[in-house]
Image: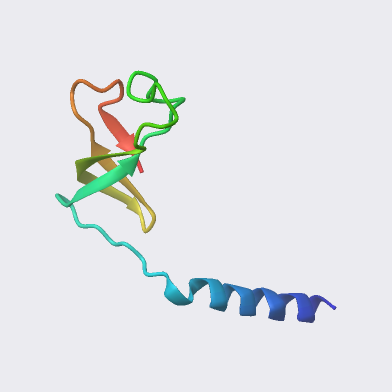
Amino acid sequence: MRAKIEKLNDQTKTQVNKHRKGAQFKLGDLVWIHLRQERFLSKRRSKLLPRLDGPFKVLEKVNSNAYKVYLLENMEYPLHSV
């Protein structure tokens, strides 16, 4: 039973990841980020406003899926982990 579940999980993973491509950024690249309402209240007053902001400069690569970017001075958090 366990082998069957693992086989089905592998098939699902293969199917879902078929059209995905990993985004790898270099230091100094400009990226767009999603700003959540609970962290950036002054920028997100309405759910109808756009969620993407940017471009922001990549400062540091934390791991293959996380980066630190430099936000503008007028924002509440000048350093943001993405």
